[in-house]
Amino acid sequence: MTIETTSDSASRERFLAALTAGDLAVAALEARSSLNAASTRQAKFISHALRGMRRSKERVFRLALLSSFSIEFSADAIVAHAFSEGILVDLYIAPFDQYHQQIVDPTSELYRFGPNAVVLAVEGDRWMPKIYHDYLGIAPSEGPALVAGGIGQIAELVAIFRQHSDAALLVHGFDPPHRPALGIIDGRTGLGQVALINRANEQLQELCRTSADVYAIDYARLVARAGVERWYDDRLRYYARAPIAASMLGELAREYVKYLRALTGQTKKCLVLDLDNTLWGGILGELGPNGVALGSDYPGNAFLAFQHAILELRRRGTILAIASKNNPADVEELFEKNESMVLKKEHFSAIEVGWADKASALSRIAATLNIGLEHIVFVDDNPAECALVEQIVPAVRVICLPDQPERYIDALLRDGLFDGLSLSAEDLERGDLYARRDQAEAARRRSSSLEDFYRDLAMTVTLAPVTPATLPRAAQMTQKTNQFNVTTLRFGEAQLAARLKDANWWLTTIDVKDRFGNHGITGLLMSRLHQDHVEIETFLLSCRVIGRTVETAALARLARRAHMLGLKQVKGRIVPTSKNMPVRDLYERHGFRRDPEDETVWWLGIDGAVPRDPEWLNIVEKEAS
Image: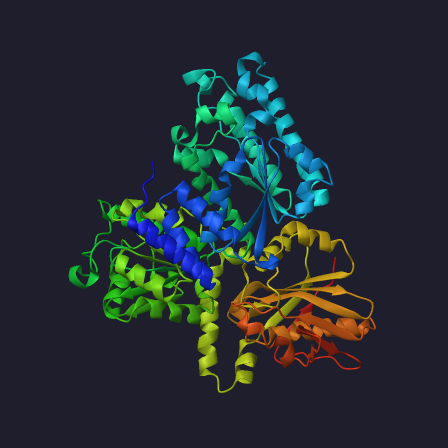
């Protein structure tokens, strides 16, 4: 029995007050705080409160659940946990065990719902019943064929689904049998029961890798992390076809939300770290650069492990920064003299060390890196500092570390805040890309004028049609770019792939390099050809190249191409959001005129004249192969 405390009641009141006032950032913060206790009652309260909330269709993420078990019990947890991450979810739950019919019938409720994403939550024994329930009744040679048959069924449904929908598809992987039929000698029999299910998971991953916007949920790892005995409720399995324990529904929801966060462009970009008792044990000002706990013995080895985990995040594209109340000279000395440090000064793209409040430091870091506060995760061991940051800048995600350093890694990685749906070359080089950006900004400060700065950069801008090779990066940018993004529409690979087959769609990537190095694909321009004009649907640029006239080059070449085809106008739309202020005046600056009937629409006449290319840019246009 769950007993509601005074703290719970106060949190609910704050949540409802923020929701009523329309302050969704604070409401999400309160929801997240209360859901940390994994209370099904709290999830139900949040979910029910959201039902009465007024919301525009554009802001709602439509999620469909197809399942072989009673997944409807997870509905409150999914809605509540998604909202705690700033995502408003509208759920469609298909009738029990009707996943096959829903996918193959083009007139089904699934397709009428028009989902943004679909979860196919089907237990492994539905695809491969003999392997799960009759393993000793099959010949050893039959196992691989049964695995292939199960994966074949999924592949067939994926192909049918893709004919009718371009939504992302999340497919549950397979949990191995908890009590293999051969017991402790299962692994000594060649392809044992567990080995067959592991092979099935590998083949499912391969199917998803080769299918646009299809992702395998590692269900076995999810169950293992929680523990089999905690995850399952056998009584409810047999009584109500609801195998997942009620206390674990929040964990299932958290796993789904990792994908929803990435699909809605809310993957975090920057990790900002405190120093004392966060990256090392103890107070640097008291212990000196070699006196802090950092080494082979506990607790120093736990801090080292945490640094290794942080470095791995950087290697896959997370920006690192520091916000610490410390003496700057002491921090410099530690980076220079402490040879145990895994993280080096050059790994950090912004450093704020001093005695000012950390909320202000975070705002300065966001400005330095040209990213929104909502893309920052701040990690600190001090509850007072964490509370102050949450109060002053609620858009920042705060992780208040537990008392034991051995639990730091789980606290940082548990919610998958930095997880994306793809890993591009730009991700792997992001730390170096920001270093190049810093070099360019230093050159800007030394230049006597902007034009001198532009010429000094020696920039080359390459405009190229989207190809199958660059399609994942193009989709990723729509999911992650918020500031310089005219419409903030999100697209998956399947949606872009469909457009590549239509000659009326022009999909162009923008690659930028300068004398400091190649910044990679940093922009995307998607436009559609109409009878007398071309309409820009999506135009976005990475924050690393904003303010370099790259946008002028892209618009000029688009207008020139339209003019060569005899078109009269270029049309664009700017849909204001709380984050895309840098793009608000884009069309006005380039000679477009606002539509008197729709203030979000802009038109550029191109009768005999088009915008000029910036003289300081070397522009390369590639043709479709």
